Image (cartoon, one colour):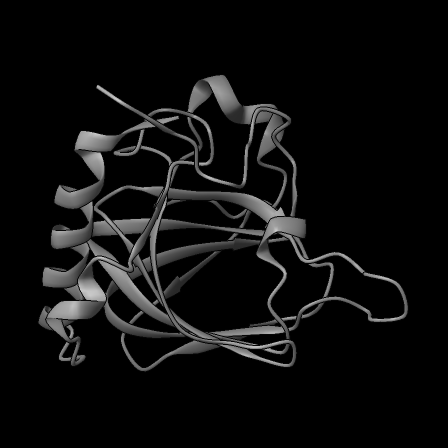
Length: 181
């Protein structure tokens, strides 16, 4: 759960980072930036700020902001009926992104929180810089870690069904729950 008082500052911080990346964002879009803590109630450590530009039944376009050292937890895009699942391409716009995919354990620059070691199974580390991109196949487990200054990235996907994403961590709640403070 996230406190209501955390949302506006996180939206403004994310908007500042988006603008620092050279991406034009209207003032009216700032309040539409989704702030997700994944139910872990520790936004500075686990979360993502997501500006959705396009969301249809066929494709989606988003800008994702990770604050410094913020983790977007391990997840995958599952098969839904006859559809094999969402295919997603991310493209770095600003900062450094540590991306983890399935494969040999090569973690050197990032780290997994000690209390979450069992729920981060994708441990093949890739470092993405502005202009670099990567495409995830449907069903491929992955997670992200923002670098020293954070990261701003584009997400282009074949379909949007984020609430159906699978998460390795059973404590994850995909739909943000806001509590009054």
